[in-house]
Amino acid sequence: MSDSRPVGIFDSGVGGLTVLREVENALPKEEIVYLGDTARVPYGTKSKETVTKFSVENVEFLMRHNVKLVLVACNTASSLSLEFLKRCFRVPIIGVIEPGARNAVNVTRNRRIGVIGTNATISSGSYEKAVKRISSRMSVYSQKCPLFVPLAEEGWTMGRVTEEIASIYLKPLKVKKVDTLVLGCTHYPLLKEVIAKVMGRSVHLVDSAREVAKEARNILDASGLLNRSSGKKRHRFFVSDQPENFTRIGGRFLKRPMRGVSRIS
Amino acid sequence: MSDSRPVGIFDSGVGGLTVLREVENALPKEEIVYLGDTARVPYGTKSKETVTKFSVENVEFLMRHNVKLVLVACNTASSLSLEFLKRCFRVPIIGVIEPGARNAVNVTRNRRIGVIGTNATISSGSYEKAVKRISSRMSVYSQKCPLFVPLAEEGWTMGRVTEEIASIYLKPLKVKKVDTLVLGCTHYPLLKEVIAKVMGRSVHLVDSAREVAKEARNILDASGLLNRSSGKKRHRFFVSDQPENFTRIGGRFLKRPMRGVSRIS
Image 1 (cartoon, one colour):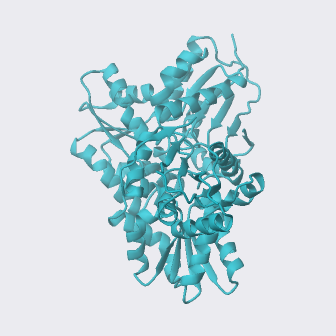
Image 2 (spheres, one colour):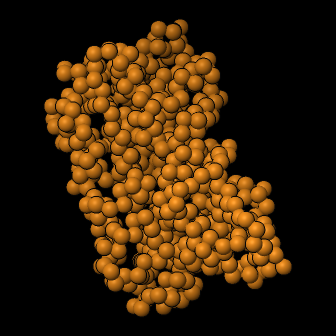
Image 3 (cartoon, chains in turn orange, green):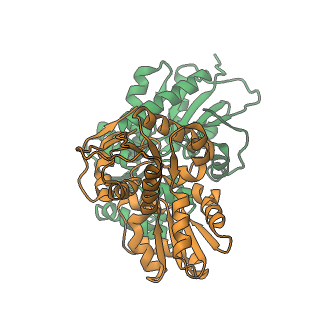
């Protein structure tokens, strides 16, 4: 069996391109439809109801492109809305929380796991719950880092100011001696160097993107939904605000120039 | 003549409450309907088309509350959308750019004016154009400060990190020896102390809120639209995301506890 329908990915903005890159690596034969909700970004400061309303609209858009699976690349939407989305739609829908939590449990040696994310992700306690479901013997310490997203978008990914802000946010996690830190927001991999420097090189940083791509492959494989044809693939990119900024910043995430980004209303 | 219809104010979020406070001072007999578009905040990183679409929807909402005048408290919406709004609606609509520019021209002694604001406000060049319309002999120097809004919302309104960020952003304006600095975003008055410290006490900081309130009074007076009755007034507050955050942060802006904030869809 071969299923040539595309895989759908949505994020509040550009950060989910880190997930797209890993999906390309794990599933090189799949076409991808990517939606970045740039007109309403960020989600991390908004309420569960609002984020869920936006997420439903995003999946509806992807469904109109006949996707066979939806990846919720946004940590906030995964935290607040994934369960509701699963009940609303008939395609498989996976988020970034569960795979990230599973990876953290696998790599920790001292069973002390740190999680950093937006206000909404951390307040939801979603990573903590996911880790405890996998193993009740873990201790999880969480920290909101609301300035990390604007710092990444401003391009201040290194330098003294960013290090100072990171030191302030991460100090409580260092005090708790976590040996594993989940980067619970798709923007944070851009600040990976500063975070690694502040935490110390011995702390393992977990980036959910790779894990979620593996999970997508497993699900497609198990359901007989893999695309086995080897024709030319063309990903499609959609955004809800004008494409210029997305295209420019997206290049940083994808590590290659972007083009052909369309705007939806 | 007396007109008891309310005055409408909208902003992308909570920042416009600084304008509301000045309108209360200048027009104590007027009722106010305030709309904060907290589900789609911030506007400062978004395109002209998107901000204009949101702004039209905001004014339509206020019109359904039978307002007699609309104040666009948001600098980004004033920069990108005011002219379009004026053509679409029949009530008087005023923004914050023109009054702020006029005040800056009045107070500068060396005719060197600095303007700080969001990406969208600064890129639009709206303050520069407004200043030049009033007096062609002025020099205007502009600077985007995209981290100021998240700093203000995070509550980091003072301290070393905020001072360092302010020093980086404001250095080019100090080099140009501006003697007047327009705070071109409703969030920035919360960082006034740090900005004043970095710029030096001799630099005059212009906050558009007071100026726009004066202009509202002039227009209502000239058009015979003032409310002359002295019955009890009750302002109404609406937001597009859940009210809790707005209520909490709004108290900081209004310098009094807020209540009775309603959510719209």
